[in-house]
Length: 94
Image (cartoon, rainbow, N blue to C red; front, side, top):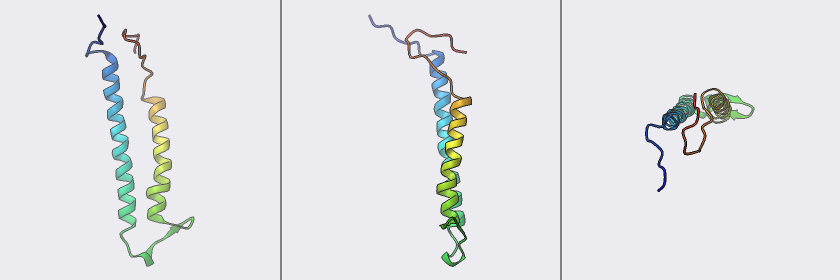
């Protein structure tokens, strides 16, 4: 008979926590993008300021936002995520 993993396994708790962190990162990314794209981009085109040839709204929402999110994801994976064994036996998870 196949051994099933207990639903109260610590790995599930870790997986749920990391999933919520991922959702939070997506929400932060959307707020960043939406805020700069529609905040700075809602003005008349004649009043736009440009950074490296891009409108400021595009630079901050798409280019700088991408760089900020890459840094946030790297920091999140490095400091908040845990290495979890995939064995069916519950390992020594701290």
